[in-house]
Image 1 (cartoon, chains in turn red, cyan):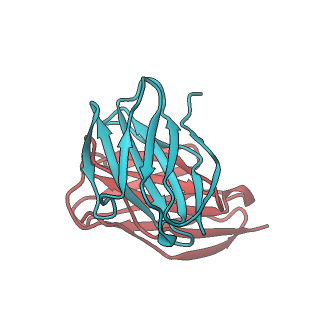
Image 2 (tube, one colour):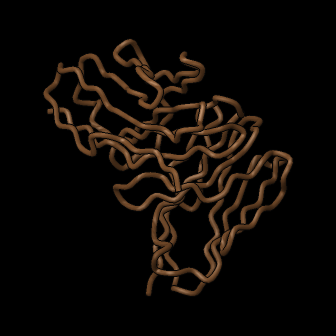
Length: 111
Length: 112
C-alpha cells in the first residue's frame, strides 16, 4: 500500500497566518498530488510534485517533497477564510495507478 | 476550463437494487478512475480504466462492481446489488498521465 497520512488532523489559525500541513507515505512514488475538499464537495487539484522535484510553488501555495523521508508538506501563506477546507495528499506510482489518500488535514481559518 | 461531470448528484436506492453512476471525463483524457468516500472518512481508490479495460482495482472493487465506457464520452460505475455499506460519495476522475487527476463533483449514493 502507498497509503499516505496527513498531519495534523486539524489545524485552526487566524486569517493572515501561514498554515503548514504534512503528509507521509510508505512506498516509492512517481508523483504526489495535493487536493482541497470543501465540505460535501469534490476534490480540487492544487499541486502535483514529481518524485524528482523538491519544491514547487503555485500562488500562495508551496509544496516540498523529501523522498528520503517519504514526506511532503503544503504551506499556504497569508491564509484567507476561503482556505477553510480539508486538504489531502494523494500519492501515485504513475501511469494508471490510483491515488492513495490519507485522512486529510481539516484547516479552519478564523476571521 | 474543461471539467469532469457526474450524474446524478444524489441517488437514493433500496438495498439489493442495481445502480449506475455516470461520469463524463475530460475529453482528451485517456485514464479514468472511480473513488469513493464514506461520510467522514478518507477518499478510497476503487478502480482505474485505460484502453477499454481495467488497469488496476482495489480490494473494495469486488464482483458487485463493474465499470464500462459504453461510448466515446461516458464512463460508468455499476453496483449490481447495493448494500447499506455502499452508501458513500462516489467520485469519478480522469487524467492524461503523467499529469494530475481531475475529479468530478461526486454522486452521493444513499442505500436504504
